[in-house]
Amino acid sequence: MTRLLKILEYGLSSLARRKFKNFSIIAIYSFTIAALASILLLTHSLKEIAVNVLADGPDIVVQRLTGGRHDLIPANYTQGIEQLAGVGRVTPRIWGYYYDSLYQTNYTMLGVQQDMPQLEMVEGRMVVADGECTVGQGVATAQNAEIGNELLLINSAGIGSTCEITGMFKARSNLWTNDLILFTKDDLQRFFATPAGLATDITVEVFNPKEIPVVAQKIRQLFPDTRPVTINEILHTYESVFNWRSGMMLTIFASSLIAFSILAWDKATGISGEEKQEIGILKAIGWDTGDILALKFSEGSVISVTAFLLGIFFAYIHVFLLGAPLLVPVLKGWSVLFPPLHLVPYVNMYQIFTLGFLTIVPYMASTVIPSWKSAITDPESIMRG
Image 1 (cartoon, rainbow, N blue to C red):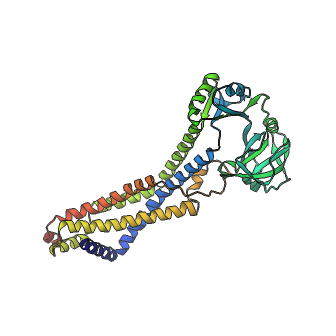
Image 2 (cartoon, one colour):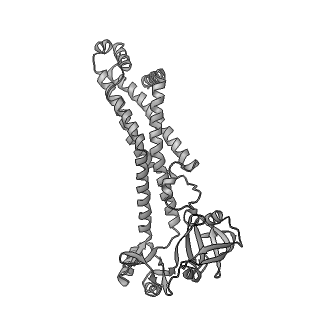
């Protein structure tokens, strides 16, 4: 143990003699790891947020397809679905999107018949009558609206209509409700000119989560023109979207990967003449090959582990403390009313260990292998150059 500590002490002093070179290596190395770790941390955190939020969502959403595209569904389909075993509440929904050209924002509009338990009123009350609406905090901020104000909208016929804002709400995650406006179902049906007896889709509650795929299959057999979408399929879709966008960000940060590859290649093609001279002198005074390898391994470990920890530290600050300002615009998508992002720290240790393996091991190999080649060479020939 004393021998290894002495080798480590000498390795640290050797690194200190080449501090400017080693500092530049650590800086590039840390930047590469911070860029990659930021993408992994942000993507994993958003996936966890999506899972937590969708836990309050419907077990199955039934859509009607016409020509392979989403179409309005007859509301009386609920009667047949309610007869299936294991099915709880079945609710036809009226909802849609609205673009406000004045404020250049997109809203999501939903018709409700009763209070929504997953929403928490911040101020005022939930909509209960036609001509009223309840808005999310993002809509209220965009409109500079207060309780009692009139919200001006243009309906599907191109005619202006107003509704009184009765309250503002929030949810466990503003990710889904920041741009949401609630109306009575009849009021929204008239706004979108949805024909009577039709709905946008139908939500289905299933008592036993294990039976969700079975119920979805029964609905598809009962109504062949429908597409039942289960909660697991929705989660898989969001996971695919986040993976795709994280892949886009990895492409954006390809320059950092190239910089790291050049750095590793430079280390692998050989060591400097000064380092060769040092190895030759150490061999001449009695150091064996194992000691040389232990020395270079310790030097590489100090640099790689230091850079890795710094990269993870800066990535954590960038994502969870600063809100990932360099990456979030890529993940926001089209929504102008994207809420303030307060990411909950979710760290996937498997991803961290994988990132460490893919970055530390190549650097260690590119450090030790050239040193081994010099260590097995005759010290006299090394010192003569």
